[in-house]
Length: 98
Image (cartoon, rainbow, N blue to C red; front, side):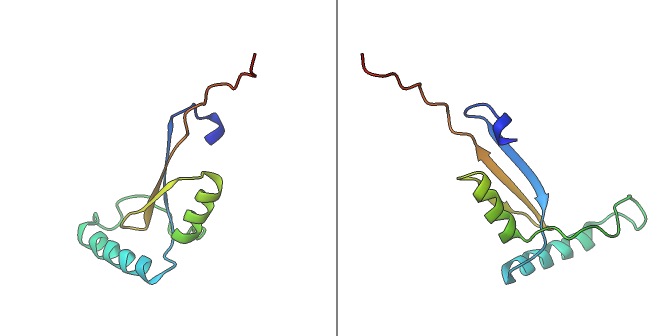
């Protein structure tokens, strides 16, 4: 996707990750408590009950950093994260001296 992005354009990715550190567990516990308090009634919705385990926040941060240098990673409650990367502006072509 980065290759398709024009100069000085922004790429935003939103995803979910599983907890991998004590801080991740604290944020997940807070998110779970909020979810229980504000969730819709049981049976409303069609979310899957079982899915492949997503990578941890740390693994996602390392992967994104290796593919998109300078990417910003932000953790959200309820296991979410966002990645924001701005493609550097195109540089002027280098002309050989006359």
